[in-house]
Length: 557
Image (cartoon, rainbow, N blue to C red; front, side, top):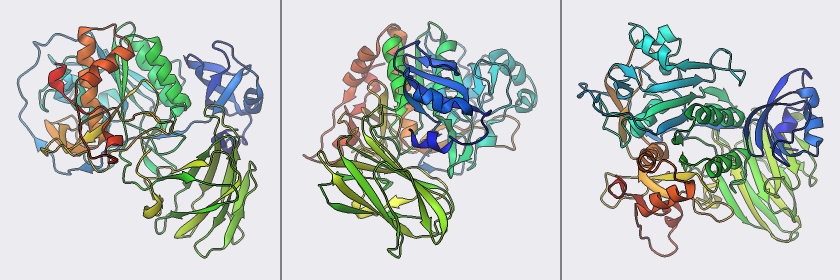
């Protein structure tokens, strides 16, 4: 059973749970579940806790997963000062594009001039998932329409009028992630630099921000993400759509087989005129990944370092070949053994009589066929580091990968000398057909890939990211602060692969404006042909971060 599923197994039997499920066959569902969103064999469901085990054991179910936190790929470098500019010329002469832009993020400032045309909004709808429930098929959140936004724009207090203020989720006071990304992808040039797609209409899913597992930029979870994709595609109708998702964590198997990634591939292969663009992540130097090979009866020690006074939960995932059998020993910083595990048995981790964690061990996870060890540590560990000792009980293959999950409240790391920088793409960007983007410094003539931009390949050996784009101190639209009643003409600067992805998304919209029925394979080919090649010394790790090279707008526009 999925480790997170085990954690929510016990509780009020009448409580409704939101889950992701992979069916053995399309349209053949187990009993006692309500289907919400569906992409081939991947569905989101609601069910009562009392039925969870029954659904899991059903022969109609291939895989059942609990919701997994989805963090934003928040900008690595920001400036706290903002530029206030004069509004530029009105862009009303632009014809509305035949392509729709979809975004899943947080904090969309509908009052910013970059998203207004002839005093009317370019937003068709915004689904605020974290807001109070107003009737919709998903059972949560509130959907704001174009009509409501236009009415609010006439008011002196538009945020109060509509009951939505993007600045509330601006935790650092530098402008929200979603507004900045939008400006890069489809800003009309009223304030920020004009994007390559200034006349597209916008569909937005605001997943909100919350404190989950120490991550203060969690955008809901994997269930809400799947349902956000459903919302965008439903509202787009028959129109071509490009969706930007600058989000994702550290963990999982990095083989493109999470249920989110399988849903993405289903969308992209089933629907023409559709592309999903994702940031690769900012984890190249995060020291949260290590891998290696273990032999029969060998023991390998992996130091796990914690932040001083960290009281947030911490998590490590270990993925290894399904034909192997490993166990682990856990030692604290005094080398006292806290756990000597038994393969495929779930066991508590005890320190000084207190339960400080749990080790969950699963055989042959159904999507990857790999074995999976999850070590979950609560906030009571009171240690500087632990040592995780891998033991090769029965080894045929020997390869293992370890990931420490993201924790913005107190990120733990591997000892830097054993950390690996490859295979550090974010947790949900490894599908076959999404377009994944890394970031380079466009202000340097040598175009260096930014030090934090995550590295491929995927664990199963595919190229990710596939292109690189400008991502250093990108000046774009800045949302209103929590104290402002509407947007002023502000810009803010942010760096990250989150900024590179919408740049590429705007170019993909240009491709679909000309050829709206292109399939995803043709879209990818056109995009990759528009890249300027890169050259690195042989065996240079940079080749795993560059993909097909630097995207060249001149080859597309």
